[in-house]
Length: 383
Image (cartoon, rainbow, N blue to C red):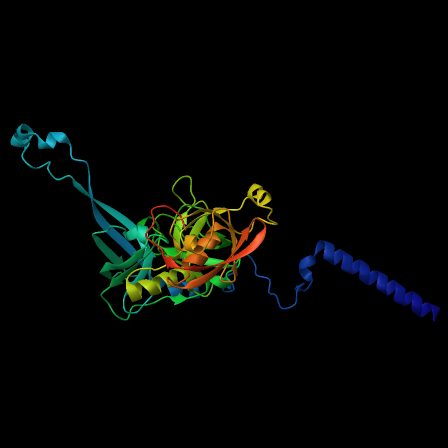
């Protein structure tokens, strides 16, 4: 028995020594194996490379045909030099210098939202344009006219005389999360259809001074001049925003772009198609954010809400008993986060509607019932 055990021990020792020598000096003699079950190891430069799995080609193919290039032109009158009115000058040079108008062109993008020819874009792309041309993804060019615009959100609706156009599928900006993948499609620098990839960097951005009603989606997908009015889509190819602005120091993309949420765009689109304009609620107050010093001076527990900094005499708020110094904390049961939130909540109300506004006044809760008015076309940002 002892002899058998010695033979086994010697054989095992020789086998381990042989394996060590082969592993060290001739590893290619050993059979190859994967350390992870079910995962193939692909050699660099292999002719039979596996197909890419992280592609958004289907989403782009679905949305891209509905994104168009927009070019607009308008006349700009330049100041007329007094010399052009001099009879002697005109006698020698005639009227060849009498034309004091110039034509300016603007480039942008748009999104086809209806098979019957409605196109959504930014207002600043087509503002005051004399002629607007829409170029489809297949190269076809069509003249367009403005159905209506909304400078307070920087949106405009165009219409082209064509049928059976490829339309975008609407997604939901309400379910977007920071970190979600998004793609921007547009016409940067007049290069033609271009797709860039990024994520949602932030939501609810405001205070940028771009428009009156700001609730932007921030993204790091590259947005450049010419992308304005183009589509921001999700990973499935659904429209979630209209690309509008960039934060830049040199005119190019700096990884900070802004898009109007599709929920806002759809509201504007529906009203313009139905009535030709956008109607918003208004109560006639000037708003201000509640800062920590203001909250302390008014004995407030937090900075949530909107300070009523001024009340228009004879306006809806004045008639309802709302006073300067009040802090609005709810509108129709919806919490007011800040002055932008208050502005948006009031704007969403229908003119003529009675709305309940909860206020903080000298530390006490006060309820006021306001008959909502129609928001005028303001020059300044006031509620």
